[in-house]
Length: 508
Image 1: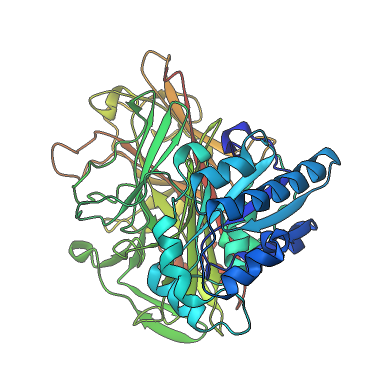
Image 2: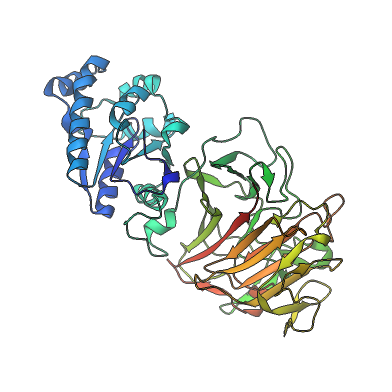
């Protein structure tokens, strides 16, 4: 059986599988190069008779493959016994083939390269000098048995450059691995991690496809529309006040806010000597709100049973004439759910940038009034009637001082906080607890988070009003495109990272 990502143990060997045209050899070589490991192609273990048979256009039988698989397995055993690390590529189309290569070898991580028939066919048609005829693709697909969840595959979509495929693999390998952590902005870092076991939902949905992540007693669902986080359960109990299957997204639930969080007054701002006008998406207040990617269908890039990587391109458009590559990774771990949002400026000029995300937390109370809130912030932003900042002031002596835990009561919050007190790990913790104090959830604010917006949902329609508390990690304050306050200026090729996560406690 393949290495379970839940063990946290670093693999000693990676087995890259897929049909012809999936790019196994290219990906395998690049992966081995990045890791500094040995590389072998399973074709090297074929007998001359097998190679001649394939070159003549004849498919191999199971009896032809038996000694071939035995030779690969024997080599793997020698490498593992010697403490060596390696990447090996092999078609391994059937489950029985993979079992022969993986059974009894928990040190091996299975990577499956997935692509559409059309893409595979086009790649094979463009090949020259390879002994595998392209017309055997149909026969390979006919016998292909895609890896099942109990094989714990790392599945990567191949409709992206090989460097990005490799980066997804590197990013998904267990955190405790001795593999060097990629620097922000590198190809490895940009491609990030991989994704969920259930695959896209079969029935039409107003939020597009969805992917379910599972790890132990945790599960989460991510949807294609806006790359949003739909729900998160621990022991079957909701941590988020999300939205149900088949429902539209309301109140910004779980949505990613790119390339700015919150509001831009009048939708107008100046950058680099030029004026820009954004669409007014909050018409009643005359603001542009929550960015430009909430209603975009994001693309699946890679997946495992407990993580998912989605991506999209923010193209130049009226009001925001800049080009960004945006990726979001959701991963379930032993301590909860982790989210990382990467944005890379792939254009030719600097781009103004901000980011946030909009989850609603719940601890099982009917309303937020009795929930106990802690916000480790020393300052709040005062706002006008349009929700735009008009000043910063200490929380001392105000009803908004939640540095010590206390019930929300009837206080209406739609408030940005800053001056976050962080622990030794660099994280600030916003806590929402049940009034009993026996259960709660910590939302941690990591890299790239300078502000947090807390919203008690008072302007939502019933029955959603004050049902959950939105705790929004933000890189900059509201109206940052206009004010420039803590606004990120992404130079061409530069990457910004925003990290936040959820750590539920006593949800058993």
